Amino acid sequence: MPSLQLEHSIVDDRYEVRRRLSHGSYAEIYEAYDLTRQRRAVIVKALNTSLQGTPEEDLERTLVENFQNEAIALDTVGHPNVVRRLGHGTAADLAGTPFHYIVLEFMPGGDLMALCRQRPLSLEEMLYYTRQLCEALALAHERGVIHRDIKPQNLLLSADGTTIKVTDFGVAKVGHADPHAEHTRVGTDLYAPPEHNPNADDASTRERLTCSADVYSLAKTIYAAMTGRAPRQFARMPIAELPPELAGKPWGPRLLEILKRATASPVADRYPSVEAFYDELVALESLATEEDEQTRVRPRDPVAGSTGPLVPAGRPEFSPTLATAASGGGNPGRVVPGVSPATVPTSQAGVLAAPSPRIVVDIGTAKSPVPVAVASSPGPSAGGPRGPAPLIRPAAHVVARSEAGVEAYSYREDFKDLFWSGWKKWFAILILTLVLMGAVAAVFFEVYRSVASRGLKTGSVTAQQLTLRDGPSMSSNDIGRLPYGTRVRILESGPDGQWLHVEVVQLGGSVPDEQPDAGWVGARFVAIDATP
Image (tube, rainbow, N blue to C red; front, side, top):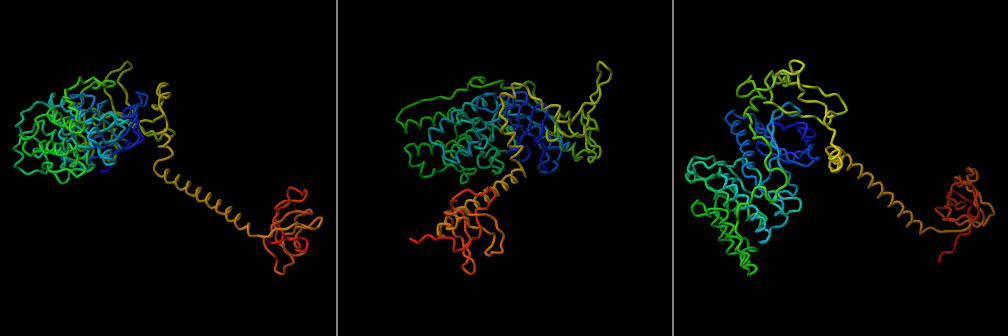
């Protein structure tokens, strides 16, 4: 199944999608601009249930529920160190493929894995980031949310690297349910504890799911951050050793003890909370600096340190009828409320597209007419029944920006998209390469000519007006005159030695501007300089 066609489009008259950043098994991540917030960068996470092919109805329903669950979990926690949800909706892309989406805060600093691969974190840096993560997870656990997929790739950094935030609550457990109840085994093999690891043995399924699951994953994340590599040798096992560069530190043995306990396979053997885990970690500073600094983690006020609203208005309610409705699988001909057959491409044989789709605009066709598909919106209006509402329309209707947005936004990224993307990028590289090669060739020619000319003989014209010809014979054309005393460089001699091919170095008098500075002259009228 192809990706959604969202790049260079505007979703819901608000989010200008710039490019796709990545994709998972069932979701795609896009960078976009919020046109209502001075083109602030945001992330649009789009659910594409058909990335792995058309799913069964039960799987599709589960995927949509998990997607909705992620938005609810983000709103429930609402901590400064948790990525904020800024909006949500349902739309059909430029090809008519329906999808749900949530809009998230953009973190331009990348993920923790990218940082620690460049350079492993020091103890001080690890504690600095771990404190923020433990504060966020402590509040999440207090509010009944267990993340279940903590790993370096799900920890995002601010542009200056001072703030770290937890993202991707797609498989989080939300609510204070029965801890002994059966739960789905999800997570990433290298970081997930045995009780919900998808690759663990059946015996571990009897273990209850507690907040220590996040402690386990956080401990293995710390190992990756401080070593610069994933803990592959400890998959589904406790961390048993540290590399020599860490083991040899004064705090190395104690760090190993802490990580080993935090990643114990039995749930009861681990730290019961992230607060207890962090209290043990922060004590390592006293071994490194001989200062006993006791710092305890306490959940912060959800609004502290944040900017803007943490939770947008409206709880996301997504209908689990996407791929099967669009492709005809599962239940062909199923009617999705809020959409008329006019919204669906004819190739889909009358099957309806998306539940209450929002507007998606192709911003690449503003200069040419765009086919308009319509969705009926029943209901009375002042002039009678409401007419058709456009589903896709020209970008010229919506690209106007507020004065504040124009003043506050830099168009550098737009120019990059316009001149430095796709085939344009490679065409520009080709042109630059040819220009560079031409410049190098010109420089080489001039240097060669200069070096070669140093070995040529020079002389002076001894005639009052020496005729300059275009060939080595009296029958050749007369092309100019060289005054007495003109200095010349001898380029070559004629076959019989009677003629010299010369180039003017310095004129001995005035000559017409159109006269060339090189030609053939009689050899007897040039006094060649003596060789030193």
